[in-house]
Amino acid sequence: MTGPGPIPSPISRRRVLSGMGGGLAAFSAFTVLPPLARARGNIRDYRLKAAPATVPLVGTQGPATDVWAYNGGVPGPVIRAKRGERLRIHVENALPQPTTVHWHGIRLPVAMDGVPFLTQPPIKPGESFVYEFDVEDAGTFWYHPHFNSSEQVARGLSGPLIVDEDTPPDVDREILWVVDDWRLTEDAAIASFDRPFHDMVHGGRFGNTVTVNGRISEDLAVTPGERVRLRIVNVANARIFRLTFPGHRPWLAAIDGHAVPPRQFGEEDWLVIAPGARADLILDMTGEPGERFAVVDNSPEGIRYRLADLTYGAAPSAPAPARPAPVTWAANPLPEPDLGTATRLSLDMEGGAMGGLQTAMFMGEKLSGRDLARNHGMFWSFNGIVYPPMKYGHHGDPMFSFKRGESVVMTIRNKTAFAHPIHLHGHTFRVISRDGKPEPDRPWQDTVLLPIDGEAEIAFVADNPGDWMFHCHILEHQKSGMMGYVKVV
Ligand code: C2O
Ligand code: CU
Image (cartoon, rainbow, N blue to C red; front, side, top):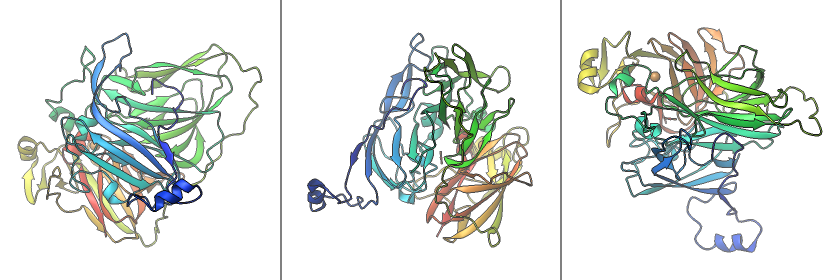
């Protein structure tokens, strides 16, 4: 991908292995069908090679940046399938350190979840791992390493994963924006990772350069009257984007890949999209030929960025007919939690600067906040527990254990001076309330942003057996205590 633009077609070869039709498929069914190939749908094969690369993040006029990338590009290639198909992704590690790949937002068998130590051994340099899973849900998802992720993601490892609906919404075209935030030196090199404590104890590794699809702001040519589906993925370590679309009134039509009744932006509205989260907008290009509009991250002065300019070309010869407002597209087959019988739990988040931990449990011992910071580099707790980074043979006890099929309502409270996007693996939850008020449309999400002092209730069915990470997606917080797992048995 280069700059904002249409999504390139998938690079996969479509392979028919389900044994129907042609002689070749029938023949191969009796030869060496791989053991995991008993898919319901077609298998789409991809290869990802994680390796050092050099890319023009700040444009071809500026110095190039040494990154770590999938298949040489930032972001990595679009991995794409239709709902019900099977993905098989061969991952090769050519990095100088171990890695794994996690498929963020995808409900899959735990062995394919890509969490080092918990669900698989890390993929060592020079080694490979094959991930294979069915995609049950349509939507906008993404992939990234889960090993040393605060460094590996910051160096450029991430990419989009798109699962097409059976009946996609009626638009003229689709645009994908992978938005990112980089901390670069003056020479456009990735700033060092030497002193992580400041980032850990504050809002994470905030950057100084915002990119869309791996480039600083560029023009996006649009046609007056066209209707676009804009998929946005925030792959930044720490930046919460607040996107405004001056001159336009987009509809928010999906959150974290899952359809919501389209809600139209008012003139002053912006889209809050936290690290890990995705949004699908339906955007009518209502400008006039020759007009130009900036899409801006409405962060405070000094850290505000222009992401792209919508630049209007000539009007089409046949003007586009006026269109009705977009309608909600089909829901994914998610299990509906039973709020009447649900197990109720709470999760309190504490720690960080301007507040800080008094004491917390760490590997079975009660330690002072000072001890945790100085001797262990740990700054955050969930329910009074600081979760240690995982290692071989040691990933501690689960935060919670659930019986398969159990409905759960969890109240998450942010008692810190920073916002935290909290992400659960292997499951999708409804956000049912915020700060005690029912949340409109109870959207399905896999990542929920807890503002400072905020509270949210999420509900889900613990239906996927295994050990599932539950963590803050500000990757420096994840590394310094805000990361545990839940067990479903
Ligand atoms: Cu996007 Cu645990 O990850
Ligand atoms: Cu956090």
